[in-house]
Image (cartoon, rainbow, N blue to C red; front, side, top):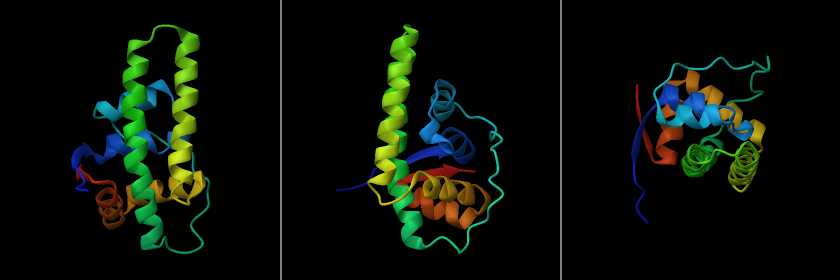
Length: 138
């Protein structure tokens, strides 16, 4: 099966996906509009060891799924006016994103760690986006 490659500015991608499991309407909007990187809360923890290529690849595969989930639920959120329905959509999208991550054998923390590291490391960013089938515009 051929992978379709999409182009997204990495800053917009990272801003919308760093906290993907905590999906909100604004994070969904950031996926479609270029944005400056959003400040993240630092855990103050550095990885005990470098991230393996396999972990980065798993995160990339999860990222591809999470981007699709964000797109699908972002479109639904944009068309929904009922606040309760919006809350249900966000909760469902969050659950699906977390499932996409854990099905790759990663914890949400590991996924977030890979995305945060990729934001700072261009080589890792390219490896992550390549695994996700996304080409970055820097």
